[in-house]
Length: 99
Image 1 (cartoon, rainbow, N blue to C red):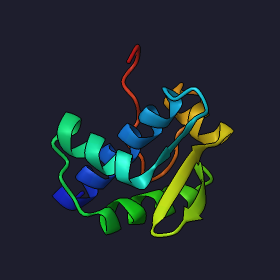
Image 2 (cartoon, rainbow, N blue to C red):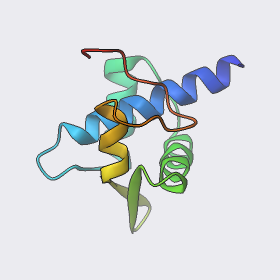
Image 3 (tube, rainbow, N blue to C red):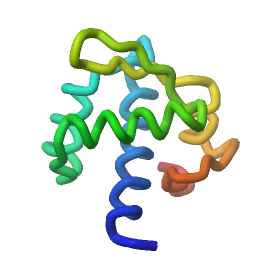
């Protein structure tokens, strides 16, 4: 697997975890971008974050709503199942046990 793919898979897991920690299971792409950069040292453009959110939407891990130039991601049951290790989603790093 390429380094680029490793970073994408890691970022997608981090995004799902961030969404699972929100009371309403939602975050916008600007907040996701900032959190990836500040907390996880994954410093990428908003377009790159949008690409990751769309990839997660394609596998039904998130639902996306467009709000102008911002995307709002909402965690789905499938995405939560991945975070809680009940299913494995292709293209998303698998969570560590107990994490």
